[in-house]
Image (cartoon, rainbow, N blue to C red; front, top):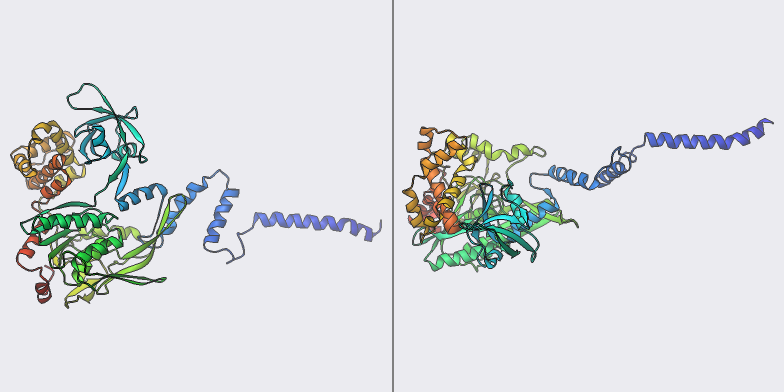
Length: 546
């Protein structure tokens, strides 16, 4: 065979082998694409596809994405976040102000679910459940003695609207279980915890942990109730309120401002400036107001305080607030999860940004600031950050500060009298609350005989509750320390009175008892009664932090 024929026979074979070898080598050392050809979301998709197709073990891709997304979003700033479908249901309940359940308050006492309150007009009241009933079984499953956590109890009692749950109830005095079927219904979650009179003319409104969609209507009802009782001045307590709906807080502060007053504005890179103004329809435009804030007041509560401060409408007292001035937009996924992305910053009327500084990717330090401020003594002295904030002018020419939360007009230090290692151990282990519940249950007939919470309060002051609590704590591993006990006696007694009163007179009575000696509330009353909260007084006196 001549050379030409040999070449024609072997050439296609060599070409085929070369191609196959090239494919093999390319597959062994391939990249996702040429440098720069796959970026951003494309690169993420490429990695996920590679894992799905080639990873050595079977991978739950859905869970992999669920675990990865929070970290990706978290890298942007401290408040952008990915929220799973499960967590989103809880978040929506907080904002929407209701959930589907049976309508009871409960406490797990001695590993048994004890009903401590009934929602008026709710499903449990309709089914015949009463205060102090014990829930022993849920749908024939034993729940007593099973060491259920509160979250697990709620999961069992909540469910779809209109669904039924069968409860095995042991009523005090009975020696048998009652079978009661409850049809779950819509249960409100109140975001105004309390509204009561401090004096004949001063009303007090305590906001809960956030501003939900129902908060404005609850707030208006509280104002109406207090005005009917003679209130012409208000103390608004925003301590511990972490924020919520921007529209809701705008509507609330509108009650105190004049038509045309700028409440807040928002602006971002792709988010054009949007201004929110008071419309003049407020019912409290002539009433004096004091706003209470602390280191946990954030976001919407800072908008409320900032608007009152910038228009010299009232006085803000307490401690520097949290400093959250970022606005989140939300995109929902079909599975019920969502991404909340920072899209803008909000600014008060004077142009202040309330957002405190943060360094991208170093959010542990950001989240620890409240503790660091405590360690540095900022809660008992005017905190040193005020030296680094940016000054702005209110409508009346007073100096206020931006860039690190709301600085109060008048600083009131955290009351640390009585707080010592013994007190902290008792409270952190919730032994004060546990003993109060135990005492309430053991003495429920006597304690239920009082007509008002004030009468019950006076009765409790005559009882040896502190000695009993000390013995209870000792039995639970916290030894007696007589000096510390004496030092913290007033604090421990007061909180026990409040817990016991809540078991018989509800949430509002709890706050009224709990706040009887509150220094910020006392200061608010003093400012109002001495005429320091009128607009004229505010703009003519330069309030110094003290």
